[in-house]
Length: 437
Ligand code: JFZ
Image (cartoon, rainbow, N blue to C red):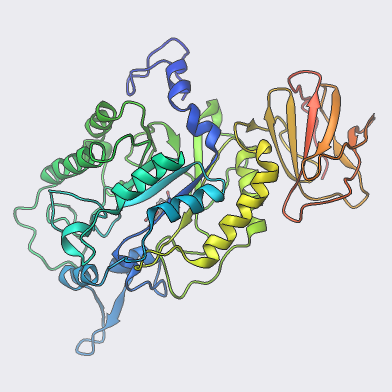
């Protein structure tokens, strides 16, 4: 956000200080759980593309024509009758997020398939009315988050492959389009957002998606965000309804540096290769890789929204839980280098790792300790008072030479990232020295 300090942002009607206050919890939180949960968890198939895109991706060869044939709306709707998450336990999900060190949860209230995972009076195509479960899991999750102290938010897709008024229709959708109206669809979206933002208490995040088929004007995006802010004045809104709003959402990638003007951002990422649950994707990233991604993201000033894809029974797959708990174990020791920090001050680091900053402290997150045993930190102008390894609080020798600051190797290393906390004589000042690789 680059508006001047005392000017009011025309979209949010707030000053920079008010923006900073509204987004404070989010900027401190750093790590959240993304949940892609819907009736696509019934086929649970990513063999033809992302599991949550099953309705769009899945084709069979029509024996009559020899051509690929898409599912029709009525055929996809049948998965709702098979969606019965009897093992769903909101307290458990939230407790997994909490043990992982996550501070907020964002869940798909409606994905592109149009199926509503919440109680809505605006369509019967929802979890309460169209599934044997007959229950609204969002109410349980909102309550469990409140009880366990996590922030709670909704993903909502503007693109909708089911709503009769959504245009353009999928090319394979054979339902007649006469009478369909995108204007009426926008009213439907507004009505649903009103439900989502009034039925569940405080909602911390609105995570839009699927805005790319239209312009902000066609989507009435400004009206929509104004409605949202009128119902939940402290909410944080992402940038996927063709308005910049509060933060950017790089997907499956980590920007190489902080974004200009302190623009807030959040990388969302899958643990395997698909967002919705898939029986045939077992290509899970290692906990080490995810911990390092968290360090790199936070070291560049971003947040990390890490996805899980629960099953149609309501279970978060164990391989995902295992990785989350391993991240949580690492954070219990090294969380001081993550929560409430800011991007590190160095343009590039001469070691394999990342760096964050908090007041007069720097946190060096070292993935692989340098071969020669010395961790070098050129360009740091502020005097180092003390270096400690967070693993065992061991004090490390610090020397300052022509190469800059050098830190001795701790007795124990963490295989994912060993964190060295540097206490400085003041706020870190850094010289823009080029770093030779
Ligand atoms: C979207 C969805 O299509 C997907 O199913 C998932 O929900 C994900 C979080 O978001 O996918 C996108 C959206 C944006 C980009 C790429 C994929 N993008 O900006 O590059």
